[in-house]
Length: 216
Image 1 (cartoon, rainbow, N blue to C red):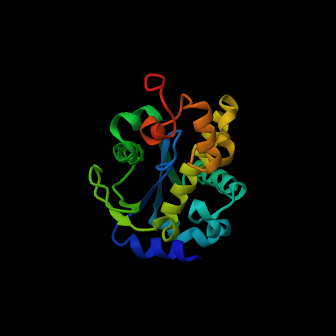
Image 2: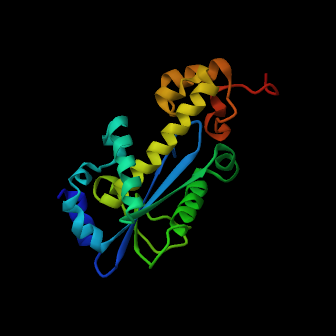
Image 3: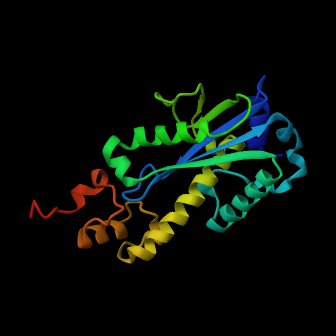
């Protein structure tokens, strides 16, 4: 048993279920923000020693892409066995530009949590308290490294978003999305200055890196 599983066993308290929530893609210059939500039961938490591979679940940023993909497939199998539930919600670049990234992320969180069925659960969200979340929740700073269910949510969000950015890299190959996933690396910024924004860039994030035709 690792410390993240131990944390969830202690945190579940008088609840029958925990829901972990995390996002991927708040900071990039392009692409959607993705929110994962994972629901686990007290009973499953007590049985986790039967599934030794779950000890590898950690903050998605600390795992290799290959390891994230392997764990993602495990989550599907566990869902098939009805041992856990998970959902994912996306908000694209247009929504982000229209309502801002914080509100877009909050709406995705509300959607992801709302689609998880069954009894009410204790909700753990990575980071700071989310002002407009419709659900009572506990904010856990650096929670993706402390809580199993938050870490699992971070993996789901990261895998799906990375897959999307790999897909976009084939449509807009000049930006190198497969390498940086839309984050503001030097390579990405140079491509943006050279080619201007693609159809999936967040204009409110990157407009200072290029000149629009009307400003030329």
